[in-house]
Length: 138
Image 1: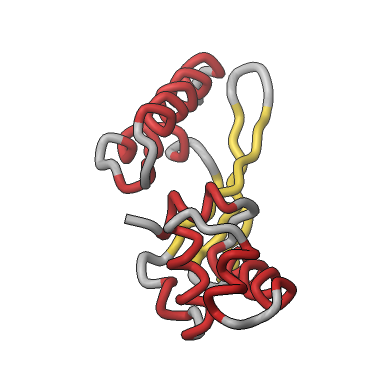
Image 2: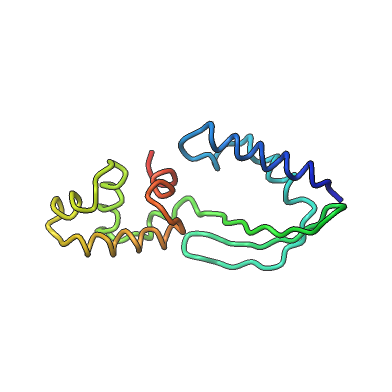
């Protein structure tokens, strides 16, 4: 059974890695041993397929308390699921353009762009432009 201190330390190291690298921290091979250390003592509760990802919930325990963790593994080719219009909007978001600028450039309404951005967020399972840019942009 792992100690709470060991789990806390592994999470802190993963956070530090993510903060030290602005783009795509999940692709770093150094994170693999830390993730294995976190998940090794856990029991899988559920596995669910999502658009472009697999979500799984795990449960574990330390000597003093129990814990659960939900992990989301994104498929690297999830971008192919975007429509042509969504791909164009995603590229514009990566370039740092606002919704109004994207709408003007594409000749559509701002509401259309908002809807496309919501769909992109859903497909990549992100909740902010920053998260999307980190996952999608080179």
